[in-house]
Each structure stands twice: as structure tokens, then as C-alpha cells.
Length: 298
Ligand code: NAP
Image 1 (cartoon, helix red, strand yellow):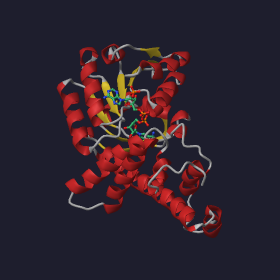
Image 2: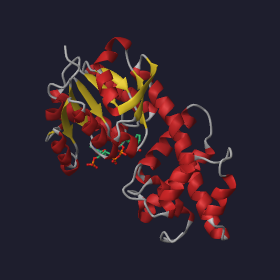
Image 3: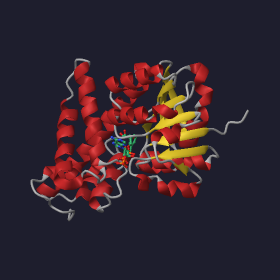
Image 4: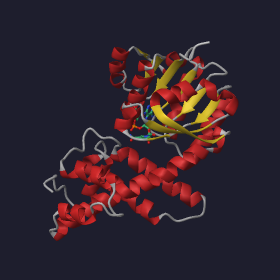
């Protein structure tokens, strides 16, 4: 028995490409597919086979990993893959999907005899490239050995949240974590916009909070992207953050709570996307504070 697997990666965007590369480097046989083939092609240099269709990519796979935009895209792509799916294969579903979508995806897995793992990840482009993601995972204990080599290749740690992927316990934790990430990012943009409007040097704010409980590495990192005009390539794009912010608001609504900050944050990100910043890092929500494009002469 070997722990080298055949792994299909469906979706090789920012995260999926990095995960596929680390899987190939760990010695697994990787079959990559992406809707826009050009984004998958560089993976051939790492030894991955670039497939023309999802069905071709999943044929004979031990593990299918999906890393697509949202739950609807994941469902669309796994349906396209169905002629090649092997009953008994594991499906590691890492797309950040809503709670309803996780149920639908798990239902598809059930119908096709796949072992479903709800497995979103924490961490962005750089940790993905370094194989240092935090994998949040729910799935049956008796099948975990089949996917652990995959989690080990893409992440530094796996947190198991439950036995039943369909219940979405990993996605619940992911949404909670992302509500914090998105709120902190939007707060960072507003701090810089307010400082600019009031004629306050942002550095004097950083100096004021340095080393105290208000200081925060994430604030510094996201502010740096805005101040130094390093918003591309995105680590986590505005257009993807809008999707997550809406999933968070909807999850709260379905569970009987109001999330005012998340709702306003979603609108703010959507406005930045409409201004032309959809593909930039989500820190570009900063621009939503200004009626017209102000450039980055902060
Ligand atoms: P990304 O670079 O925009 O990649 C999105 C992928 O989804 C692309 O491969 C895109 O294909 C594909 N796609 C979108 N709609 C599709 C459809 N209808 N059919 C087929 N393929 C479709 O985004 P990402 O940052 O890698 O994010 C991927 C997932 O990971 C998202 O759920 C995101 O929330 C989650 N995530 C992201 C981060 C992060 O920091 N970036 C961190 C944790 C989790 P094309 O290339 O053809 O457009």
C-alpha cells in the first residue's frame, strides 16, 4: 500500500493552482482541470496532467478536490465530472460554499457513491503556495486515511469538526472565521479612508497603536497593500469576498440573527467591484469610500 494517490483538482484559480502544485510536489499523481484552460497549463511543469474536461480529470481518481468560486459552480462542475466518477472515491470539497449548497453537494455525493468531505480552508494565496493552509474538515473517521495525504500536502494542520460532511460543520467554522477576516479588511480600508479625509498620516495611527492590544498584523498587512499599491495580484479578490460576505449574511439570517456589519461590508465590497476592483485584493474595498476613483495616491 502506498500513500501516493491520484488526485483530481477541479478549479485551478488562486487557491486551486497552489494546492495542485503542492500535491504534485508531494508525489501524488495530479490531474488538473480549469474552465479557462490557460490557468491550469502551468501546472504541467510540476508534473500535473492537464485535462480537457472534468470527466476526464476525475477518471480513476482516488480523491477529487474541488476549489471553485462558489457552491453553484462546484455543483455544475461535479455534474460535468459525473461520467468519470468512481463510486467509493473521496470528494474533498474545499470551495467556500453556503450551508444550503453544502447539503446539495453532499446529496450529489450520496447519489454517486462518493465519500464526501466538507473541507474549506483558512489561509490565502501565500500560505496556499507554501502548503501551509489550515484545513477545516468534516467527514467519516473510517475514510479519513484516504484523504489525509491530500490535507498534508496542502496544509500545515487539519482541524476535524465532525463526522458528517453533509451537516456542514467545517463550513460553519469557515463562515465564522471569514466574517472576522472580511470585517477586519473593511475596517482597515475605512481607517485609511478616514485618515485620508481628515488629513491624518496613517503612520501616526500605526505608531499610536504599536505594540498595544489594538495593534494587529492583519491590519498592517492589508493597509500595506493599499498604501503601497500592491492590490494585484490578489491574495483574495474583491469579487470572491463579496460572495463570502453574502454567504455570511445569509447564514446569519437563516439562523435568526442580524449581521449589520457583514451586510454593510458586502455592499461595500460590491461597490468596489462595480468600480472596477473585482479582481484586485479585497483590501481594495478601500475605494468604496470615495464616490469617484481616487487612484492610490494615499
Ligand atoms: P479564483 O482564483 O477566482 O478561482 C475561482 C475558480 O472557480 C476559477 O478556477 C474559475 O474558473 C472557477 N469557476 C468559477 N465559476 C465557475 C463555473 N461556473 N464553472 C466552472 N468553473 C468556475 O478564486 P480563489 O481565490 O482561488 O477561490 C476559490 C475558492 O476558495 C472560493 O470558494 C474562495 O471563497 C475560497 N477561498 C479563497 C481564499 C483566498 O484567499 N483566495 C482562501 C480560502 C478560501 P476560471 O478560471 O475559468 O474563471
